[in-house]
Image (cartoon, rainbow, N blue to C red; front, top):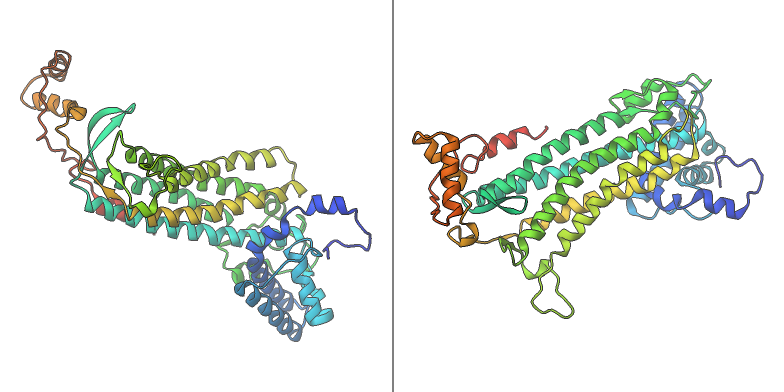
Length: 424
């Protein structure tokens, strides 16, 4: 069944190419299409297009389909082009002529749009919730290991003293910035496009404010052309937001992989969380974090894909938009899994003792020692040259007693202030 069926058979090869794998993808938005259909039916009754009795029948039929989706028994068979045609078919099978009225004053264009808006809004919220869980885990780890020294690096060379507390809380605070972008993406999709039809509105006296309120949107996308042009723009915005969080998690994963290696040896994980080699029995590979890194980098590439699909398209609907759904939905599903497995794994991290008196870290405290000389009265340049000379002639002896007391430093992490910054 096709919503645009005019009784003309279409070439099977053309049909297969144009439908693609929409059936599989649309399972993710099935419940949202049903929710939107319920709101649409209520609006149709309110403006007198259908009767109260017909509304009751439609809501009852949609409830049955909603239960099937929740139970995992809802299937989009090959005879259907997408979830929208499947739902209308099932309603017609159940209710006869009443079922055929559900598409009144709607186009598949705004039907897809509103389902995607609801899916995006819901799943952005889920991603934020899961980010908050990981954020809380990292702050807890930062507090637990706040006194554990961790060498700091610039250019992958020993630089200055850091700590595990500083490391964990750094990534926690970066995720706050990521949530700002995720919230901005929610703001973008929290606008009701239903009623824009094929992009130019409807001659029916539809009540778009009523469906906006019923669906829980903050506001309407008032201009019907703007509503349709949001297709692609929404996905680009979401790709930026998911990409920002992905960047943070990919960099964190890289740190984990680096710090697990024998040349660093700062952390480890239980054997159950690592994999081995088929020929090297000593290996403990951080496959989880390598896959997180790879998946996050894949998500970061999504923004480019969204731009290239939609760039320079004129106003109005184009079938190119169909290609946006698959990878943006896959990115959401991947991101939710990534956040879950990252949180699960990082809680089991084994933080090792670092011997700061080792020759490997001999120059970790040169800056602190320069600062001590400055406090004692020397100019910074003079102190720099003095310590630099000791380094050059190999007479430098580090003093490891200096404390960093300013806000956000190694000995003043401000964890509660960071916690308070997380968006409510």
